[in-house]
Amino acid sequence: MSFPDPMCTIDLVTRIEADGGLSPQVREVLGAYLGASLLADGFQTELWREARLTLAQLAVLRSLRDGGPQTAGHLAEAAGLSAASATRLFDRLEDRGLVRRHRGHDDRRCVEIHLTPRGRQFVGAVRVLRDSPLRRAVEAMTEAEQRTLAAGLRRLAEQARRLERLSPRVALP
Image (cartoon, rainbow, N blue to C red; front, side, top):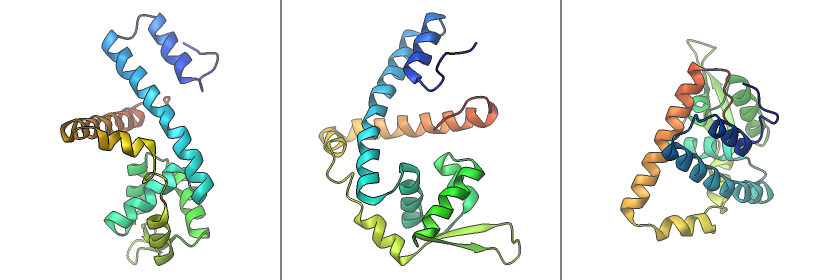
């Protein structure tokens, strides 16, 4: 099946739906996801304006801040990036002095990514989420709702990435 505009997610969902391929529950979940995804647009715009960072770059910096040095492969997988995309992302962050790479002593193919002091200071200064309506909306939810939402979103991301590895024809952000 081919779609006239594969970049248009709503068109993709509508066409699958027209083929009878979605249950009402799946249609509801995808609609809710698409609605929530629109919230990221404003966040991404503000993040770029404030810090000249993409969401993927911020995710990598936060992962390094919270988890210490990590292998390039682990960071790429956690961010859902291909090896080539991750390499470009690390290049950009390294060019800005936010991370540095260390090659393994025993295996030069193993690259470990470290957050620099400047990177730690930089990621701590990013305030886009702190002052956002999205944060206030999450804070307005009950703890049970927050846990359920977090677990569901993590599970969705894990499943999508797992299925992407199994089916390289599907391109996920």
